[in-house]
Length: 423
RNA sequence: GGAGAGGUGGCCGAGUGGCCGAAGGCGUCCGCCUGCUAAGCGGAUACACGGUUGAAAGGCCGUGUCGAGGGUUCGAAUCCCUCCCUCUCCGCCA
Image (tube, rainbow, N blue to C red):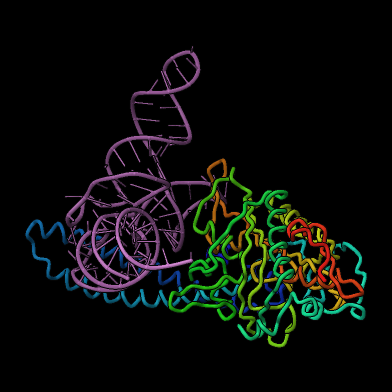
């Protein structure tokens, strides 16, 4: 989210950014119209208040001197009426401006390929060799049920569609994946592990930009006005909301495992089977707070950290950079990592790593003091490291043997009581 | 869930209707002093917004902000209401 001042000072840049993203630019037209009104009203209000303040002092003095003040009091009540009505008008305008501000997306970084949709995304690199096509591999939900480690009938009985229930080695593998990923990021990549609450307050979800835009896709506990986290990003970004950090403390690296809860409104019929799209899934998330100077460098490292998870698991993947038209609202640049999914016969997203630059930091109001005493917004990055359910799905397919077993990737074995094969 | 205490600047803390954007202290910064260090002395030190001036850094004027929102009042950190948060004790509980 941008501040009013920023929008005013970067008018041309923003018009261009919206065009690059194939967004309609009328939000900006509307913004400038309202901002003009807002400033006129503000000026007028301030004039009135100045007058009232001065008169109030005068009243105090006169009263002490025992003079008559009834005339002034009458004038005051009139002006106060006017102030009230102007305040109301200003409130309405400010509310409208704030709603509009939520609709202005981040400015894409210059290195982002121009394009209208996912068709214009650019493949950056590939790792590993997809070995099997869809013909000789059972989709993960079938092999999972056959092996007795996935039970969608029971999960549906308990909670309806788009949930999963893991049993035995499946359950064990979920835990193993989580621990493996956390250990890797904490021990090797230097992230600080956080174990956060899974329910968050409305203002935190607003500060991170998930509200009001995605309210429909979040689970909401009405009685307490708390939201189930759709991603740990929300908590990790919210962690320092409203704080001013010190330059010497940057960069901060955080990682957290959380279950993620999403209503998946608007994705009806998509990926209805298996582990790919569920209302509740597990994810290990990474978030970085950096100085503006290093954020793009840090983004490359962040992607590499996520890639390493897949490399160690031995899962073929590719990295793509999203085009201007396909990028998420708050991202300035996004890499997606897609894992090879034999049953789909294509790559499927398993991680999304973005630099939001100062966009999210403005919204969450996270600043830092430079060594010379000046203040600036931090840059915030986030990435999945990686989606646990999708990783399991990929393992069940990529590690499938012709006789219907699944080999356990070596790095997971220590986390799985040494089990080498699920059969 | 019940009872109580509290939330003021980077921090501590005073302030119960006007002379309070806020005493005092600590910290920080600048200057002075000083073999070095420490101490001492003088000064500065919240944020946002609007206007104005300037090439800019900034300056000047104003408005708002003492947890948040609302109310009373000519005037609120101070009085009233609602909410949030923290702490202590009790109850309950994995």
